[in-house]
Amino acid sequence: MEHRLLGGSGFKVPVLALGTATFGGTPRFSAWGSVGIPEATRLIDLCLEAGLTMFDSADMYSDGQAETVLGGAIKGRRDRVIVSTKATFRFGPGPNDVGSSRHHLIRACEESLRRLGTDYIDLYQLHGFDPLTPVEEALGTLDDLVRAGKVRYIGCSNFSGWHLMKSLAVSERRNLARHVAHQAFYSLVGRDYEWELMPLALDQKVGAVVWSPLGMGRLGGRMRRGQPLPEVTRLRDPGTQPYLPPVEDEMVYRIVDVLDAIVAETGRTLPQVAINWVLQRPTVATVIIGARDEKQLRENLGAAGWALTPEQMARLDAVSAKPQPYPYWHQAQFERQKQALG
Image (tube, rainbow, N blue to C red; front, side):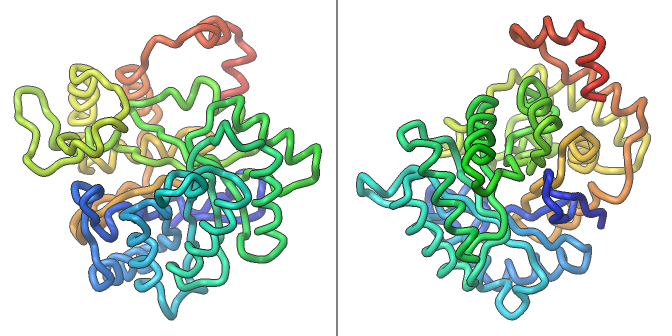
C-alpha cells in the first residue's frame, strides 16, 4: 500500500486507515457497529495483509470500549501498527470531564493508554476546538505529553481555519509541538474543506486525515433515487442524525448517477470510486475507512492501489461542486489562486 508523509513531519502513514467507531457498540453507537475483540482481530489481520497499518479511535467511541477492543486486537503486535486516537469531547459527568484543559487532556491520555494497552500513542488529536481553554494551555499540555514520550505526534480535528492557524502560530511562537495532521470531513458530498482548510494545509504543511469519505454512508451505494433507505443505517439513527453533514438528497442522487457511470467504466464499486476521488485530492495523507465486517473491509481496501483518470476526476468535480461563499468565490477568480491549488 502507498504511504505518504503526514504533513510536514517525517512520519509516513498508509493512504488508508481503519476507523474503529464500529468497535464496541454501546447503545449510542449501535447503528455504527458492535465489533468485539475476536472480530476486530480478524479485521486487523486483513488490514495488515493489505499493508494498512494505521488504526484510528477516540475515547468517546462507545464510551471507551472502542479503544479497549482495539487494544485487545493489536495485543502482541503493537510494533507493527500505528495508533491514533482523540480526546476533548465529554467523557464523564463532571465539569472537567470535557474540553482541552490540562486537567482533562492528561487524564484522557492516561486512560486511553490504559485502554489501548500501550505506553505511547502515535498520533494524538484534539477531537474539536475548545473555545473555553486557552490555546497555549492545550498546546502546552500536548507538548508535555510529547516530551514525556507518551505521544509521538499531535493533530486536531474539526477545526476551522482560524482555529488551526492560531494553534500553529502559538506552537511556532512558543516552540511547542505542532499539529501535523487535521482530521477533517471531506467527501464528494461535502467539499467545504477545500475553501479555507485545504489552502491552509498546503501552506502550513498539515496533512489531512479524512473522516467519512462516503458522506456518513450516503455514498455507500444504498441511497438511491426512488428507493427507501435500509432499515439499519446511520442515516436513520437518532443519535447520529444531529451530526450528519447537511446535503440535499437530490445532490446525492446526481453524484451517485456519475459514480454509477464510472463504476461501469472501471469495474470498481461505488464506494471504491468515491474514496479514490478523495485519495487524489491535495493535502490528503490518509483516508479513514470503516467496516462492520470482512466483506465491507475488503471492498473499502480496494479503493487504493489504482487511480481515476483526469477526465473521471473532472466529472466528479463538476457534479459535486457547490457555490462558494464570500470571499472564496471572489478569490477563485484570481489565476494565482488556481495555480497554488494545482
